[in-house]
Length: 298
Length: 298
Figure 1 (cartoon, each protein chain N blue to C red):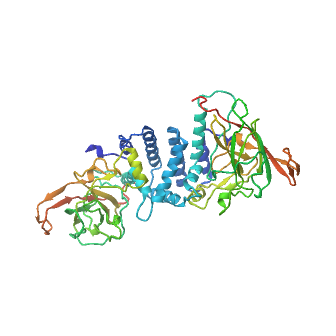
Figure 2 (cartoon, each protein chain N blue to C red):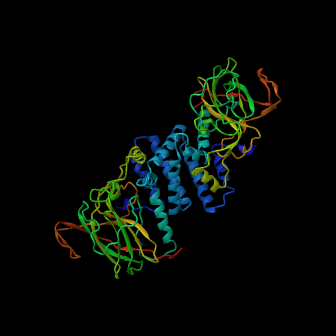
Figure 3 (cartoon, helix red, strand yellow):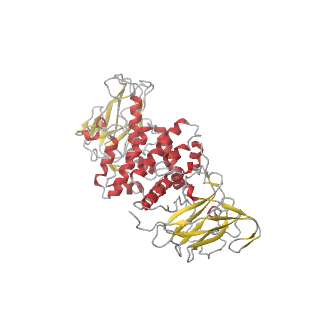
């Protein structure tokens, strides 16, 4: 019965050995690596029994915190940098084998506030009517990596308001500051919304406790979400970040990329470049999206 | 703003760097290692976005499965060998720096069926009256590592019945097949219960789905739980396993140690060695517990 004996090291092979009958090669690969790293972690820190039970209690509390509007495990993944790592790995795969000088638009985390089915609005619409915040005109183009304009590309847009609060976080609120906009024949888009501000991720649950114990703040810099897609191209889920926003250098979910930081130019009240008459000051933000053709490389 | 840029590798240092203000050195150490291994895992398997969301959904389902009688995260830890690894690390720490030839009683997992406050019964009691299963007489001694008997050592005992079911798993059941027994002046203990049989861990939740996908069965070999303590000695939480039980070589939670497998001798009906008259056949199981003195080594 020697096969029953193992020590603090050989137990790992014993557990991995139980995958012998696994019929799904990818699942087997993922679980093998997971078991290896989980055990390595426990050995590296010489994990104590009372620490283990606190971890069990923490995970249980995360589960109990989840409901149809709150996803504490995604928040955990976000704040431990795992979500952004998975996004970066996806992005690297999409780029694999591709050569060429023009970088595509960087991806970043989707976050928990996407709401499917935002209204499709015409170019130039104000998607945030009545929402608190300073008005901002967003404009630019969607192109492929050669700079060829993509007509009819879809921008699915969402953001919090000027107080850092999303519609989903207000009980019974309808959709606000959300829209789907399509580019014109020249690949151009433009619309009005507000300039988003920084806000804390939900920190009244177990992940908030973890952040405090880690000595971290829960804040994200101001940003607007965009999911940009066009036929024959890889969809990119990304943000535009507000230049000079607080917390740009310490985003609680590690989502910031230099390439996604956009200057929100200040303009006096008057006629904006799209002809809209503004009775108060406004901002102008410009960004061109570059999508990766599907099947490029790989 | 170069500090914002990272790639799929350097993101790990960026996340660990956020622990700079952590005031708890041990928590900082544990979280640093956790982040490193979590990220290494994601990179090793080149984790896909759809796999990541399935993992989020799995953890959420585990949380939703937990209630006052069901702990799916402990089951997850058990079936991935983490619980037994933590037990083995604890055991190794208790032994650290100790020399000597006599090994102490091996520890194993506590499992989810411990129920605090079992009745204290006299030596020789039948702790499983009316419980289905074949009767068994358990006996032995509790000593220190030199073989010195420990008087008044406490054995906190629990097991499933002869059908492989624990009292806690039957709605509204009172405590059954549980007791606390104290050793006599010679460190001896003896009591009657049933011979436990193999049973499946709860496999109607997400962990059961995981086991099936891994190609594993959910069964544990027959065993009786004992938590043995005595003043001045390290408490041991362990099982005695039934020799020749099915699944001894593939315990779903990796709890088996050779040293804990006990022969359950078959006896004909008649007078047992403690004087009890048995009208049907019974088993006799013998095991001597050896406890580690506190402060030994380390």
